[in-house]
Amino acid sequence: MSDVQWKNPVVKWVDERLPVFSLMHHSTVGYPTPKNLNYWWNFGSLALTCLIIMIVTGIFLAMSYTPHASMAFDSVERIMRDVNYGWLLRYLHANGASMFFIVVYIHMFRNMYYGSYRAPREMLWFLGLAIYLAMMATGFLGYVLPWGQMSFWGATVITNLFSAIPLVGDDVVTWLWGGFSVDNPTLNRFFSLHYLLPFVIFALVALHLWALHVVKSNNPAGVEIKSEEDTIPFHPYYTIKDLYGIAIFMIIYLAFVFWAPNFLGHPDNYIEANPMVTPPHIVPEWYYLPFYAILRAFTADAIIYIPFGWFFITPKLAGVIAMFGAIIVLFFLPWLDTSKVLSAKYRPVFKQFFWIFVINVLILGYCGAKSPTDTLFGIKLEIVSQVATFYYFAHLMVLTPLIGWMEKTREVPNSIAAAVTKPTKTEEA
Amino acid sequence: MADTASTAVDDNGTEESRRDFLLLATSAVGAVGTAAAIWPFVDSMNPSADVLALASTEIDLSPIEEGQSITVMWRGKPVFVRNRTADEISKAQAEDSAAMVDPQKDGERIKEGKDNWLVLVGVCTHLGCIPLGQKATDPKGEYGGWYCPCHGSHYDTSGRIRKGPAPTNLPVPPYEFTSDTTVKIG
Ligand code: HEM
Ligand code: FES
Image (cartoon, rainbow over all chains, first blue to last red; front, side, top):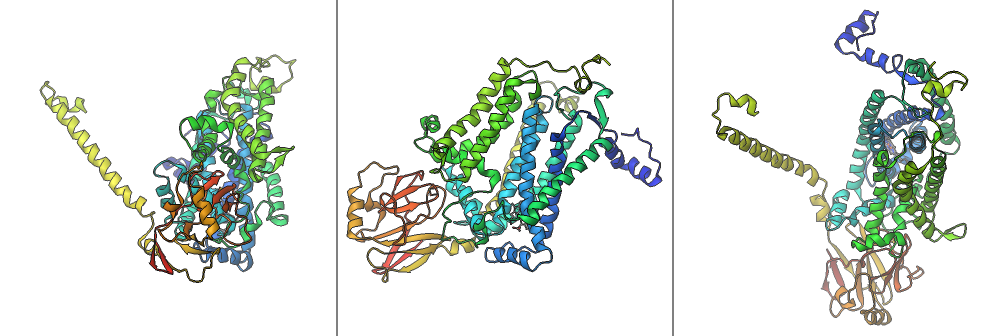
């Protein structure tokens, strides 16, 4: 790390004792990046932007927020009405959570499309999934804080999932609540953890970036960097491209904040929590909907439930296992994908199945938002959820390895440079 | 470890096994100590003394007429107290031997001689919503008791689960009659 000669004596003095400037240099100007990255590679820096916005707005919200069952709702209303720019802080925070999830979902699908989870990037993929899990927990905890009806009943339904654990389930739920129902002790601890987890995420992001800098970025061609010809320095080329992406992102994000701040929220959350009345239709935040659909798909008469029945697993527990399993299987994806080729660009069959998978996840999301008795194309959603749940797992656990073995892939370019230069030029150039 | 120690030790291995023992014993004590240190943190999240102290509620039954229900709060949860009609009682008893998810006789769910009083924790055993059926205008489900709108669980006039995803009957909280017209829950 000492190959940079710092001219400024103060910088030099510091750098010799703690090489922060060298580190910064190495991860920007000195960091070689594939020269063929497309706009799907903007979503990593967008995710970091979201995290920073969430932490900053969150810290300022916490200055005016009261984590007490009898005061939380009013304190949020006070933030909205009386605190200077409180409405802005809260709308930035509430919509920021949604934007964060959109960005991260696109980032994850990008990785699946270009095979970025494959060797040597497995560790990056695991850390990404860990970040995603921590985000889901953080979003859930945060949504409870305004103490509206959806906060309260969402917290009740989700914590009750743990009662499905055999033998100790009920004790675990009481422990999570700190009482016999969701109440003030629950709100207090949720606030404590909601404050903590974003910093855990921050640390995970640091590890994620460290791992990235070890193995370097994947790219649309899915071939590794072989020579200097394949790369350009991160700074200024990608810093400027990332900034451009951030500008576009901010336009969309702020359009929600200023013109449709409650579009992604639920009106019932403007009614204060009432432990004696359940809202007629409980829906989680949109970013959990596919998993909520998987959870509900396991009813006693569902075909997908049958194998669970053999092991005396109740439908409720089966749903919980499948819901967590839906994320756990993603950890195995680096090995479930058996193809020699990384990028879907050269995988004509996988490419189509990839898009079917994306649509399938969207259908699951739709099922999660509606009541199981509603219909889609005339089919009862209960059935649609069961089929879509089955397909979700089938795609990852059966189709992905099979396609990898059987598919006839297109010819992969020899190098990144070859992928972006005209085919008339020789590839050794 | 053996490398550094072996210089001064004879080769019959006693020194080594003594060290192994010490290492094992230290690790064991360390592990127990760590667990003991973690426990207070974990247990601090369990219900505290003041939460436990609020754990009983008295109810006056005299204003509840036949066929009426009231909802009271106990441990932050709704408790359903229903003065059942003769019809509901006979229906609950007649169905005692019907096929059920969580088979239980009506007699096990009430106090002897108080057939009309049904006391239930009004929290759906599926995922914790509050079933409808307390108000006269509420839907009562296919078995005439309670109906949970969240995912469609039907409970009968004894609060037993008869249809839908809920795994168990609505629980009967611990309670006793302190006089003919008052019960103490908890
Ligand atoms: C990973 C980053 C974060 C995510 C995904 C997140 C998510 C959320 C969500 C979804 C809400 C509910 C918004 C609403 O409907 O009103 C919320 C509320 C809240 N969050 Fe966060 N949050 C994050 C970071 C933070 C941080 C670092 C703090 C700092 C203490 C914080 C403090 C708060 C407070 C005080 C509230 C309650 C006020 C309100 O409801 O607007 N959050 N958060
Ligand atoms: S919570 Fe009552 S049916 Fe699901």
